Structure formats: C-alpha cells, structure tokens
Image 1 (cartoon, rainbow over the protein chains, first blue to last red):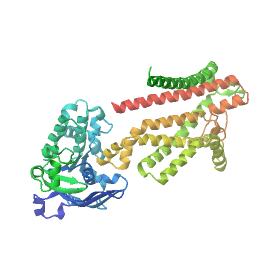
Image 2: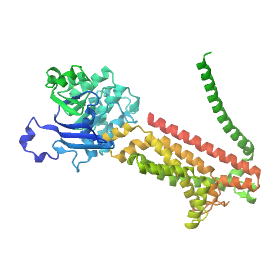
Image 3: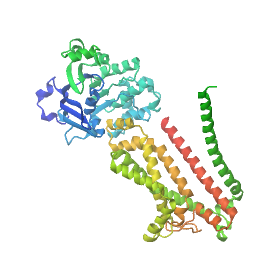
Image 4: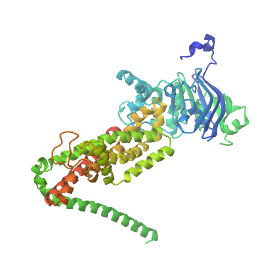
Length: 266
Length: 278
C-alpha cells in the first residue's frame, strides 16, 4: 500500500503485522451508543468470525470497517480504524475509494436488477475497467471462485434476480471478489440459505482466505466454529473476548462467552 | 348461508358494480364523442388548413400546434422535474425544508389552470414581451405540469429498493453514479407514467393555453408564433357556434390522440421492462 514506505522492513516481515487495527471504536445512532469502544486487530489472510446475540452491534462493527454506517442519518463514529496503517476515518480519506478496497456481502442476497454478467462487472466498471476481454476473464474468475460458474456460464445474460436464493448470494460474493478487495466483510451471508448453499459459501471462504482477509459476522456459532481462524464474541456493543476459534469454543476465558457458545443464552 | 358469506357477497358485488360503472362512464363518453366525430374525419380534415373561420377545411395546423406545444412543455419540465425529484429524495434529509418544498408543489398542483393562464399572460406574454406564442404557452404548460412530474418521479424514485443503493455504494459507486446506474433506470417506468399524465393534460389543456399561445390558425414557423391547439379550436368552434360538426371532428381527434399517447407509452414501458428483466 501507499504507506508501506513509512514502515521499517522488520515490521513488514513481522507475522504479527495486522491487516486492520481497530482502536476504541465507538458508533452511535441519534445519540444512542451502539458500539461501545472496541479495540482489536484483524490478521491478514485469516477469517475472523464475529459472534454474539442479536443487538450486540456485530453488524455495526462490520459496517464501520467500510464506512457504511454513515449512510444512515444521525450516525457518529469515534475512534480509529487503520487498514494497512492508514486511518480510514481521517478527513482526507475518501469513503468511495475505501469501498473499492473493502468488499461487503449483505445478509439478504441482493443482486442488482441487472444480468448476471453486469452484476459481476458493476464494481470494476466503476473503477474504469472497460476492456471486454479483461471483463470476460474477470467474470469467469470471480464466478468460479464463488462456485457459481458451472451453474450459470451458459446464461450470463439472464437477470441475477432469476437465480435461486443460494445462487444469488454466491453471485453477490462473486461481485465482491471482482473488485479484488483487500478485505471482505460478510454480514450473516447464509442467514437465509439452505444447508447446501451454506456449505458452498463456507467452502468458498476457506479457499478465499489464501488471498483475502475476511471478517464473517454470523448468528450461527457453528458456522464460526467451522470456518473462522479467530473468533470475537460481542455482547451489548462490547467486545468480550477475541481468541483462537478452538479456544473460544472449548475453553473460553470469559464466563459470558462460555454461556453463549454453549447455548445458555442468546 | 352464514353472515360472513353474505357480507362477502355484498362487498364483491359493490366493488364490481363500482368498477363497471366507472368503465361504463368512460365507454359512454368515448362512444358519444366518436359516434358524432368519426364521420367528420377525412384526409382533407386531418391534413389541410381551416377555411372560413373553421366552418370548412381541416385542422392540420391545430394538430401540429398541439403536438409541438405539448412536446416543448414536457421538454422543459421533464429535466427540471426529475432533477428536483432526485435532489429531494436522494440528496436531502427529510426535514422542514423538504416538507415546505413538497407542500409548495402540492399547492401548485391544486391551482386551477386558468390561473396559470393568467400568470402566463401577465408574465411571459406581456412582461417578458414574448407575445402570444408557442414559447409562452409551452412555459406556462411546463409550470402547470411540473408538480405532477416532480411528485410522480419522486414516488418512482422512492419505490426503488433501498438495499440496491447500499449495494451500489458498497461497490465503490458515488451517490451520483448510484442515481444514474441504479435509481433512475429502475424508476423509469414510474417517471414515464408521470410524463404520460402530463402529456395528456397538456394536449387537452384549454384555459392555460388560450391566453398564452393565442389562437392563430396559421402554421407556426418559429417559437414566437402564435398557435391554436385542438382543445382551443374545439372550444372556439363550439362556443362561437361556428360549426358543431367540425367541433365534434376535432374532439374525436383529441380523444384519439390522448388514447394513442397512452397506448404508445404503455407499449414502450412494457418493452423496456421486458428488456431489463431478461
């Protein structure tokens, strides 16, 4: 990234070099504090699972990472979010350029009312890519990575809205991948999907983490246990515990984490 | 039979009766106008100028005048209306200002058209010295249909699902790119409906036009020439008792014009929707 020259070679080589550093992040809507001062690091090329009961501000946390919260009126954000050491809330930081580097997959499958092809190239076109051959290649590559290519390769011109729910969500994943983002945010991506579609998405994620840093918010603790490398437990807008996924689910440090993952509340 | 089933039957009966009555009224008016007017129609009536104050001859200049005047009015008000609607629904937060603007447009929509005619006469015709002309008439009509265009466009824009905007923004689009690529294309059928309503209203408008576009029989040669629209022509023929037959002929053309504008727009809209949904 552009700020790499400011760091010493030692820091760059360090395996503890986090992709994202969140420092005392607070988000409020209309004066109500939703996220109450969260600090954590997100390691590069890993999957961070974020779990917690409804209303624990998981989604608010996720949307703070690509400045989507501010689209709602009355939103206020304090604290710092550094991506590759660059503060995305700095006055000079442009949210439009940030969102080209950070991809988001929403809870409900939400294709744009365009063809499958046009859905995938929507972002790259905005960034100025217009070479037909390059776009074609990008469409095949992105749809393949999302395990959708084989199912749709003969009907790229049909509307994305005509696909099944599970296919639509994989299309949304492909659309995000086509942006070649550095960070992928997924907001309960399989909450409305059947088990087979869910397992396809999870399979895609475990392969994708070789190239991308992924944050996965999920209401399904088993999903976090299956795919996340580290897992963060949120409760009432606070980060209770962040640990290796195995530890969170077998030997959590906090009593509240244990209660949640064993299903005693939430 | 239970009480539920009875009330159900009464409700269905009342709804069907209301629908049939509405249809019957439309059908009756159409039948009445077309029955008296259609026999008057001929190539000569449609494609030649009037003779002897309209007692004889045709209505060609009035057909052209009506079309040009209405198209010009829509051409002026459409960009203004759509841009206003985009600004109100996409760029401003709901508050006192937007409420005031919306209240203003609603009031504008409720003003009788003769008041627009009076204003157009005082402002465009005399103060700005545009005279009785196509341009004075078009500007007056544009003001008259503007509220309809703003409100229908706004409704159409609001009916575009909010998540689509979020998706577009999350993919690195600016607000304006989102408006251009997602909001407006999907609001288009609604906007076209507004245009259709406005065009129909412009074609049939009499009061706002007679004081601003005048009533010249001649074919307009420039935007500053006076024109006579079909509605004005009909009004003058009937009121001055010049020719009842020609008046009905004109009315039939007017009705058929509005009807074909509607059919054409529906056809275009369906084609557009099918093309996008494919």
